[in-house]
Length: 351
Image: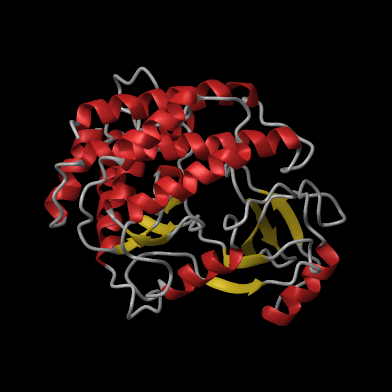
């Protein structure tokens, strides 16, 4: 638990002013609150919060500094989860959003704590699951993704969340710009992948809600392996749903992979579906043509390279507090491997 002042291991938290905010938004809160940083995310800062009665919430705010314009939009995340509350896509119930940075140094939002495991590492998965549960987790992941892509944005109030057309083109332009803002050294292959993908964008098959970072450790599960809540909506927008499938597959680790986009990925363990089986399951449950899936894999590898370059630059500058990531030195090499994987996928796509 955190120290007596309430902030403990929670940089970027003012427990006194946040206590007053909580009292206004949750009248039966029993102050003082205790805050503790939740590890795992590489973009926004996430905190576990509880009061003296043991009630729990989760608070999200941007990094301490180094915030990129258009990223880390707390109001957007809050709005998306509030809109999806009755859509059939499981999300955490939201408590409120605060745009005023004077409360704790940046805008933030608060959601209810959803109990259940988040599978972050192979060691955890081996200890807490068996092959049958892993199979259920795989199926539930894909079924929930298909359900999200079936949501009509207009009736739930997200019709103006973003432009619907040219999603892949917009992604290519956006992450190229962000790479230019954060790059720590020249990497010509990143630009080569950008050129190849820009010249080979498939026709978009409709428009839906795109999560933008859909992967195993952005899901809270029930003990039975079903999806209890999808979290981390900061990259969500409208556009090409197949981009989400590409992201899920890029983060997924097969047993024979010689490189894993997520080093701690657990999905190579027995019981999990393979990457190919995920794609087949999505194809069976949706009416989308997956003939161009290699393009979406290449886009996901390339985009992840840009994201990790930004994370590396911000961690190196201290934007997440005084503690450095233990594996920070590995990031430049991981970025380069991701770009190489993107190049290989563009070659396989034949476009």
